[in-house]
Length: 72
Figure 1 (cartoon, helix red, strand yellow):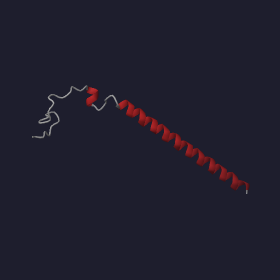
Figure 2 (cartoon, rainbow, N blue to C red; figure 1 turned 45 degrees about the vertical axis):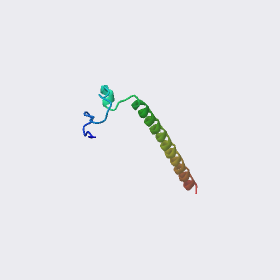
Figure 3 (cartoon, rainbow, N blue to C red; figure 1 turned 90 degrees about the horizontal axis):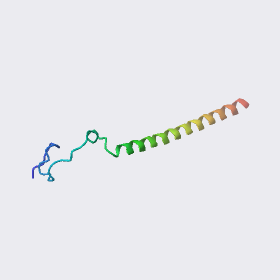
Figure 4 (tube, rainbow, N blue to C red; figure 1 turned 60 degrees about the vertical axis):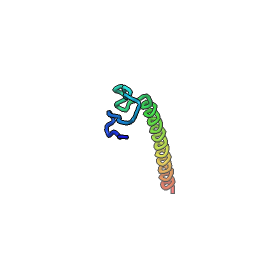
């Protein structure tokens, strides 16, 4: 069986014509993309929150050590 190298010419693939895709689907903008983007935004927000907490803790520790060295 012949294998096609062109996606628009599915030789030997069976099944007849290809599904008509909307412009958004052709641009990889299908129905699940918004969910993927929302999940990525949630992960980023969580990462930023954790980084800010670490930075605040480090700043607090530095302030604490400055206070200790100033008192001695």
